[in-house]
Structures are given as C-alpha cells and as structure tokens.
Length: 321
Image 1 (cartoon, one colour):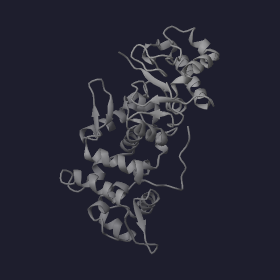
Image 2 (cartoon, rainbow, N blue to C red):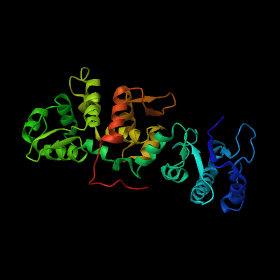
Image 3 (tube, rainbow, N blue to C red):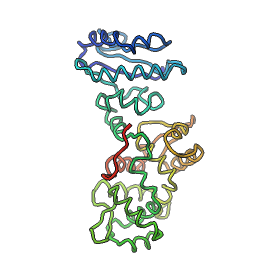
Image 4 (cartoon, rainbow, N blue to C red):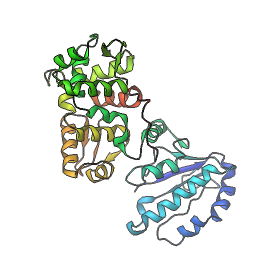
C-alpha cells in the first residue's frame, strides 16, 4: 500500500541504457544516502508484475525529515530524462503519488514535462490542471467574478439570456449600485461572459458553451435560491477564490491548510467557504477533512467547463510558476 509513482521508458529496449545513465547522475548518489529513498530504475526484463521498461517509486515511504530532498532529487532526474535525446519517459497519470500532497505544482510541472510526459486514461485531466495551474490561484481570471456586482449581473443575464440592456437598465434590474456597475460589466466583458454591440448595449455571450454553462448553473439552484443562484453560491471573494482553486486542481483532494498556503485568506475563512460550497453540493468532504470538487454534481461540472474553456481574458497573462 501507499502512494506510488509509476513510469516507463517508451522504448523498453532503452531501459538498460537509461539505467546506466541514471547510475552516473549525482542525484542517484544522493538518493543512496537516504533511508527508503528508492533510486529510479527501469525494469530491463519483465519481473515482479512489471513489463520491461516500467518502474515505480514510493514517495509515501520516505521519512518526513528527508522527504523534501528526496522528492527534489527524483524530480530533477525526471526533468533531465525528459531533456535527454535518447530516452522518452512517460509518467502514468493515474499514479496515486501524482498529487499536491506529494509534489508542489512546480515539481509536478517539471516531473511531467509540463504535462507532455503524462500517459494513461487520466492524462488529459492532469494535463489540463497543470496548464491552468499558476503561481497563485487567485491570479486566474475566474477570480474576477469576485468584483462587486458580478454575481447579481450573472443572475440577471442567466434568467434573461436573450435580453440586451444598457448599463443603467442592468443596474436597475439587478439591483447593483451605479458606482459598481462599470467594474462589474468590465469584469464580465473581459472574461468573455458578456458581450457588447459597441453602442452601450450588453448581453450574455452567444458562445454556446459559455451560455449553456452560465444557464445550467443558474437553473440548478434557481428554484431553491429564488432566482439568486450566483449571489447565493458566490457569496464572498473567499468563496470564489476557494472555488477557483478546486476548479484549477480538479483532480485533487485538499485540506484547509493546503488552501491557506495558496490563498491570501485566513484558514477559518477558507474552512467556512469550503463548508459553504459543500453545503451546496459543489464540493464533497471526507471524514478526514479533505475537500474535493464534486464532479457528479451538474453545477460543479458546468462551473468546471466554464473555467476550462469559457473564460477568456486576453488582457491578463497567467503568471507562470
């Protein structure tokens, strides 16, 4: 048992050459100095349930006091294997050690060659997560939904998707203060949720995926929330930042302390936001206080779709790790 990382050299006939190269690396020598720090090794012949060319390590077996050094040595070796002209190394995306509880975002990018080295049925999900991951999740354009007035405008546009309105009409209909309406419309325009005809009239984007996702999330809760889906669900900037983190790290289970390391909020506020989203079915929570995105919930899936493909903000660059 435990968390394993599984990998393989694409051409099994290269296993011996890859092992010889690994034996010569300083990171391999370093690994021999630590207890339970396995060396990277590719099976040269089928054995112990492995095919030729395959291998695995067990990060969960490494003692806590040496884990950082050992994991960095592994990551460095994989990073240089990816750059090697002779070998093509793949990482199995379903490996249970391929998680934020084991490696940092930066290490995951290096370990997987920015997702290009991932293989297996879960590769696309992990690759998407790595592509979206930023130094700070709060830098993602989704967090513009925390702009004052945006949740109210989302409710208004989602309830009346064919409506074309001016700023003043929208402020009156959505109950948004005139001082906030400009910033709210700008945020939704920059993310591609709302479009303008250039004459001061605005409407919900006619891109089918954006329109469908905005509407589906709204109708999922509209009856229970009396038409106030987004103002109820996205009740604070903390909630939006927390939701954004789960939409980025869609494959992960996260604790409050892990989120607190990513986000500029106090742990108690993050925990309240997690519980709020769990109460509304967007997150699930385990008895060990691990939260994860509830991908069996319609609203969560449409928020994920919007996050993955709907939001566009060409004026802001993602901050690279």
